[in-house]
Image (cartoon, rainbow, N blue to C red):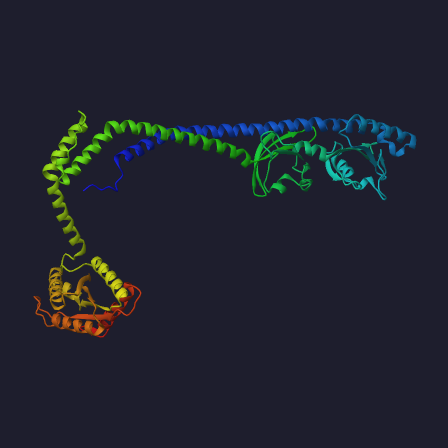
Length: 532
C-alpha cells in the first residue's frame, strides 16, 4: 500500500536542486560578502581618516597663526616691559592689540598680564579684585616657559564664554619674567566647525586635545580639561604621528582616528559611532545574500523542472504501476511507454518482481514483524511478559481504573536466597528454577492476571479488578504452590511475597514503591512470607 504521507520525488528533486544551487552560489556569496565587508570597512575608515586630516589641517592653519602672533607679541620690547612704562606707551600697545583683533576675526581677545596683577586689554573691564597672576592662562604660560603654552580652556569670569587661550611669558631685558601675553579664541566657534556633520556619518565629529591627552576643544563642555583616557575609560597612546583606536562611551562603540600637530602641541581626534559604519555594510551583505538565494531558488526550480520531465515522470508512472499490482488492479494499466534507457529497464524488472514475489515477501515481513513484537515484549527464559510490556500494561490498567472507578492490586515476589542456588548449583540450574517458578505462577493465577519477570529472580503480577483481600488470597495460593512444589534441585524453593491495592495513587511509580516496600518487609521478617 502506498504511503501518501511521504514526500514526492518531485519535491525531493526540487529540494535537492535548491540545496545544491544554494550551496554552490552561497560559497561565492560568502566570498563576495567577505570581500565586500572588508572593502566597505576600509572605505569607511578612509573617510573617517580623511575627515580627521581635513580637520587637522583646519586646526593647524587656525592656531598656527595664533601661535605666530603670540610669538611676535612676546618678542615686542614695549610689551615685555610695559609694567615700567607710562600710560602713553601702554596706549600704543593697546592700539597694536586692537589692530590684531580687527585683522583676524578668529581672535577674540589680545591682552597681557603682569606680575603686579595688572592687565592690558581692549574693550574689557576686569571685575573688582582682578589679578592676572591667578588666571589660568597666566599659570599655563608660566608652566610652559620659555615655550608657548599648549593652550588652556577656561570660562570668562564676566560673560561665561568658553575660550581657549594661547600664552607665553614676557621676559625683560635682564632676564626676569614681567608677565604673560595671551590671545584668546572662542571654543564654540572652533568646536561647532569640528562638530559639523559630513555627508555620510551623522555621528562623526572631531575635537582637539593636548599631546598628554587633555581635551582642550570639544562641543561638549563636560569633556574640557579632562583627559581622553579618563573620559573614555581606556588607555590610549597618542605618541604616534597618527593612528586609530576604538572606545566605548555610554554603551556606544566608537572608531577614532587621530593626527598630531606638533607645531602647536595638539592632537586632533575624529570619532564616529561604529554601528553607523557597520550597519550599512551589513545591509549590503544581507541584500547581496538575499539576491544570491533568490537566484539559487530560480536556478533550482529550472533544474528541477528539466529533470522532472526526464526522470521523475517515469518513476512516478512506475510507482503507480507497482501500486496497482499490490492492490490487484492490474486491469487498470497505463499506456505510458517508458524511455529507452536505464530507467525503462529498471521499471520492467521491478514490475516483474512485484508481480511475482512482492506480495509473498510482504506476508513474510508481516510474520517477522509479529515475531519481533513478541520478542520485544516477552522474557526469553520464562516466556512471561518482560518489564517493558508490564510497564505498558500497568499504565493501561491505571488509566482504566481511574476512568471507571475500579480497583486493582499488585503482587511482587522473589525467590528466597536465589544467589545461593546459583552459587551452589550453577546458573543453568538457577535458570531452570526460574522456568519452573514461572510455570507454577502462570498455572496458579487466574486467566485475567498478568505475570511478568520484573528482573533477575523478581516477578510482578497485575491483578485487574481485584481488592487487597483477593490479592492476598492469590499471593498465599502462589506462596503455597511454590513452597510445596518438588523442584528438580535437591533443595526447597520458597518465595517472599508483597502486595498492595490501588487506592487512588497518582502514578504507577508510586504503587511500585508500595509493593516493593511490602516485599522488603516480608524479607525483613525472615523470608518465606506474604505481606500485604
